[in-house]
Image 1: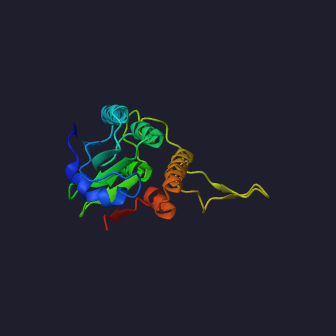
Image 2: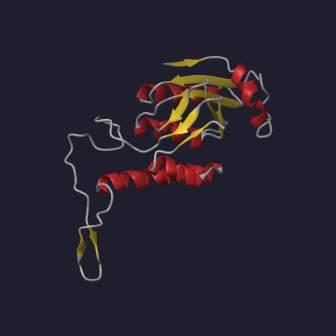
Image 3: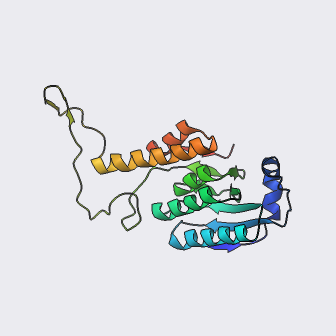
Length: 210
């Protein structure tokens, strides 16, 4: 469920973080907010982008998305991230209320945001791409032909080492490496932790709000 409402409460919580970068004050009427609760898909992505466009057209100083998500579709997530990166106004993502999470696709969104904030007892991570068995997932559908793990090959003599197969299929390695590069690029852009960004993709690492 996605709703749009006044953000005075959230502005009070993160006002100290944003005041130095843009002069936005808690309670400013030009601060816009939306809530995204649940999986990220085409409908929620379109709603986010349209509201961000409206905020820009209205001359808003800040756009806040209050987030609680288990993740979602790669294509929808990337559309939202493109909109954030192209936004002329700062976008803050606030994981709330208490007990919420920014898992999987939500972690990438947090890394893309100009400002990332979390309420107590929230968490972020578990960003390893997984198959959801349908269009828009990061891995092929389970109905797609599966590849066997490739064998390591010695380039010098052409020998094959059966005891040391490379982990996963070629497709899985391709998708994981693409996801790592993507989130690390966002980390570089925003000055955030690249090493942990990689671990949340490769090892499904998580962190609490603290």
